[in-house]
Image 1 (cartoon, rainbow, N blue to C red):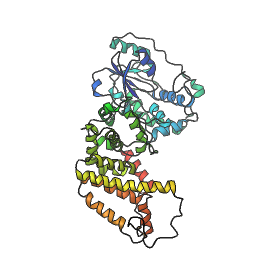
Image 2 (cartoon, one colour; image 1 turned 60 degrees about the horizontal axis):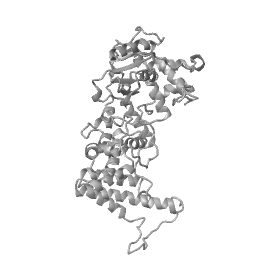
Image 3 (cartoon, rainbow, N blue to C red; image 1 turned 90 degrees about the horizontal axis):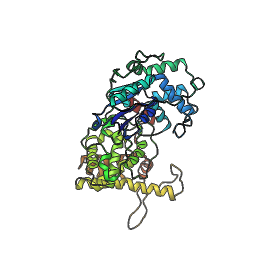
Length: 471
């Protein structure tokens, strides 16, 4: 769903997919000023807001056919089939899966489908924000009334010819029917439709839409720029982030759907493009972890950005314990680097540098092993019992009895106590290096130390699902 801010007439169009929205927008001149997803910014609160609703099943099938068969409209992004083997059951599975998103912050086939078939009364669709509602089944008459209220000339609404319904109807099983009615029960109740496709109202312009019991997800409004189609460069970096004093709890509560994807290590001049490219790394984590990464991106480019700096320190000071397990070592090191460069005092900078050196030294060594050294059997058949000369008076680490690593960690723990915020980052980095496939972990195994207990992947996934079910 996209909330279009139209320029002439000045109005907010709450556009639900597959309700004839493109045609209506064109009839109003299609003068789009802005687009926002999942929210309507407060600055447009005084404008008239209208939406179009449609029988839940015919709307669902319209989207289903578009993905399965294409809509045969020249120049349209869905002219060709997107999902030729799509079934009704699969489409309902997509709706039921909490790990498939729909909010346009990430574009994949499954996310796009869910975006199009999401129930009309879902909070993301903002239907409860609409003051004037048109019904698809009586679109011309309702549109004429809307134009009269806006004092603009009405036009003839010519909807595209639908795909042959009989030929392209999906196969519905008894279980599919039951699942569909359960998922869309609020649509039927609130929008005055019945499963037989009938409505007791010929027009919906005076209908009262029942507001959802669940409040709108405030993270959309708090980070308005991210959930829009704006393009923002560094000269307006403050506008790319939430307000510096915004509440952080909603960002903690929103879990980003999906499965984590590979690290995106490139750079985009458009901050919104860069932020969206980072999101897949944080799938399964809270939106706050992603926001922290975005503040670091801005600070690395402009250390004087007060909004980015304020948010960065607020997240570390107030919420780091909540999100520390969600941050990869890559982002923990980025935090450490930022502490080293921009720490609020000498202690924070020194502790940040310590964490950075720990991780980056290991990174250098592991990179050298990967690039230049042949693979070696594990565990090694031979172990060094004693140290030998290296260079400039240094001798090798005593593999089986050496205390170098233990002492390094003890010293780190002592300096970590000097600064609560930076110290937590340092010790989290040290712990990760001992858990991961690094030189620290391998030497611990050689010495016979028991493995650091890790949460099984299956347990972690189950915990995520339990958290998601609570939202």
